[in-house]
Length: 215
Image (cartoon, rainbow, N blue to C red):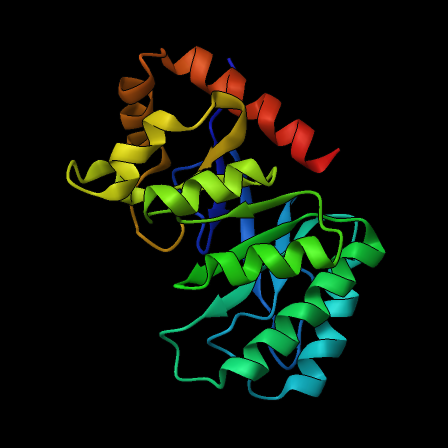
């Protein structure tokens, strides 16, 4: 049986030998991550040294192991200037479009803004990671052809993520650990309970989703 896919992680747990996508936040100096799959993006929290980071993201995003540009996006609770965030996000949308690569989105109180910019730049594939927002946002994401990734929030019974994951078609989501420290196995087990799928069925579905996403 295929091992679970951790779609978005900041740190690979030492016990885990399955498939994972390492999230690489672009810094001033970058080396290619030692990972079969990674994403690379300029995060809206980290907008210092932008000229160097623009150079870095262009090199990293073009690497064959980089499956998507991100995480990147807009965070309206962040202290960084909102217009600068939008400008850098658009730069990364243009980069992804030019490379014909999908994107991984970080959005806080800015999902509709991000969707609008993705559509303006012709981005066909994008995943809103760590989804834990309201139904109207989920509905818009799915209507416009994008996907969501759920993390440790689904372990909290009263979270929006735990309630809304049930409404997502199995072909339109991923599971992730992000920076939670939770085991991907725990998150998979909970998702399997929610969808009434055994682990083999769930894993097979998410591998199918992943292969479609990176195709």
